Image 1 (cartoon, rainbow, N blue to C red):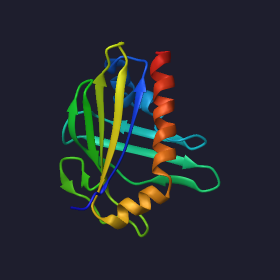
Image 2: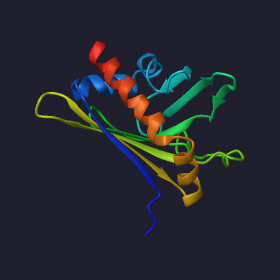
Image 3: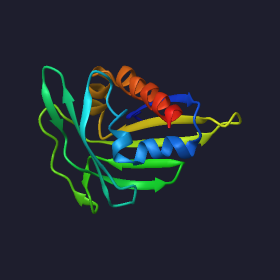
Image 4: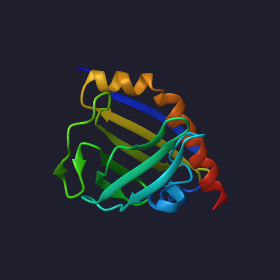
Length: 158
């Protein structure tokens, strides 16, 4: 069986409810959901299955990166948020990815820790080995790791 996933876990200081707010409130999501120096210029999220997950990033020296609106598949408050780029909001089929791009499904899981903190696990599922390899090569571990650090810092501050 092929492994088409990329995963990382981090322990965070804040409670799952606080981390959840940072994941599901657009203004908070904009503050952590891109590895610096990339910034999020637009975030639309409705943590309801069938609703929108849409992030637009500004990459220095490259400009705007807008992969379009994805679809929230699962939203369990303070536990799990899952969305995909392969479907449009309303569970409609999305367009084929642009050349060099790939569809993925992201699962962000939160588990309470005994000390009151949160174990954050990001798992990204890819349709094929090429998509997984491309995501790994573009720096999944560093990029999503940086985002997790930013999420931890933000969640401790609110």
